[in-house]
Amino acid sequence: MAQLSDRISNMATSQTLAMAAKARELKAQGKDIISLSLGEPDFNTPDFIKDAAIQAINDNYNSYTPVNGYLELREAICRKFKRDNTIEYTPEQIVISTGAKQSIANIAMVLLNPGDEVLLPAPYWVSYSAIAGLAEATCKELPTSIESDFKITPEQLEEAIGPKTKMIFFNSPNNPSGSKYTKEEYLALAQVLKKHPNVYILSDEIYEHINYEGENFSIAAIDELYDRTITVNGVAKAFAMTGWRIGYIGAPEWIAKACTKFQGQITSGANCIAQRATITALDAPVSNIQYMVDEFKERRDLMLDLMSKISGFKTNTPKGAFYIFPDISYYFGKTIKGKTINNATDFSMFLLEEANIAAVTGEAFGAPNCIRFSYAASKEQLKEAMRRIAELLN
View: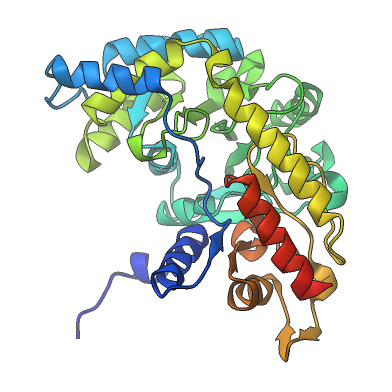
């Protein structure tokens, strides 16, 4: 019998992708599924970016790209970091990858050794723990709750750091909770991190522009942490370019070089046409994509209003991204329509089977009392989804 490696056998399947696949399967069977499971904007890529891609095709960009990306794109990323994040990077500190997920995997692979510990403030994006596990590190979750707006405290961080702690992953605005750390909160956490010079910080800022309140603040802008922070970003979420697969990092040069070396043996350089289009996307004023952010904010407010009418749903007010992450633990132990709901996974399957709504269990994100709904869908779909859930539960 064929034997798979322990590496793949021990790896969890991405719950977001699994739920999306299940929803597609049921749709194909003719069921009227409303999928609120995937973190994917439902807008088209803006025309000015598409035009740049068409121009690149007509200009015959069709060759292998440098492993770390076109110099012109790395320069555009440096301009973007300076403009939006007040961080100074040189092109040698930038590496472009096939999506921010690959950027994160590169970082884990070049910095983590077997037995190193990674701190994951929970809830965290599903792939963080799997990627750290692939690098043979161990994960320590730092639990939060809806009461703390899903954010860790400096005291919690101080207590969690141990002799084997090598990295901490931050994600703000956060997937799945939509919570966002303020500048003051990051400065307070930085006071703890300054005392632990061997701990590296991965700051995943992929949702930075989908932000409804105040400025976004980057940890690498804190001078004392600049030399051990890796800033991860990409164009998927803010520019509705999920399928274009462009992510990037800004990092200390020695880390960037290591990521380039690693990527050179895995995928080499990212797609040439997508890179040329990304130069145009990043050089454009951020106001060009404000219409999407405004629409997401309206949907967030709609979802919060509709959820407030569903008994047993406890919500915070997400400050960014396009998710709502209600605490639904009120339903644990209850039997509805002959089905007993023991946990969030049961609850998400119950919604899929009884209301044809696809959402993702909070267990996948390290928050077992919650469930994630993406509101990257039309208002009509969101209203219908919440109507079905209310009818089922009320």
